Image 1 (cartoon, rainbow, N blue to C red):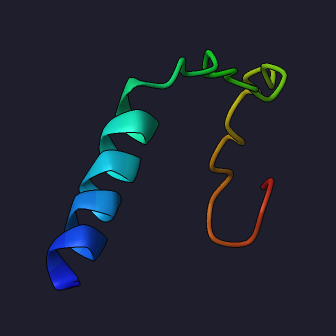
Image 2 (tube, one colour):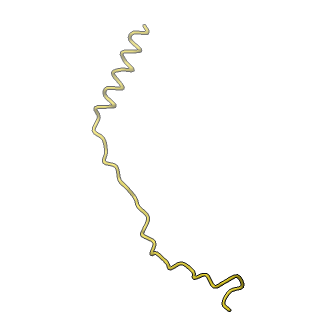
Image 3 (tube, one colour):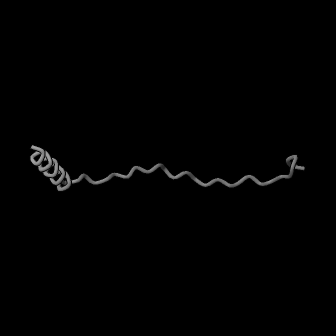
Length: 47
């Protein structure tokens, strides 16, 4: 009995592995523009 179950599981695995796979679709986020870094203005801001 257990041989039949094992064979059935192997058969299902082989069929699933050989099935035609759908192409993967990559969804990317829109490109965020690069902003300029703030300029260091000293300890208390602009002097």
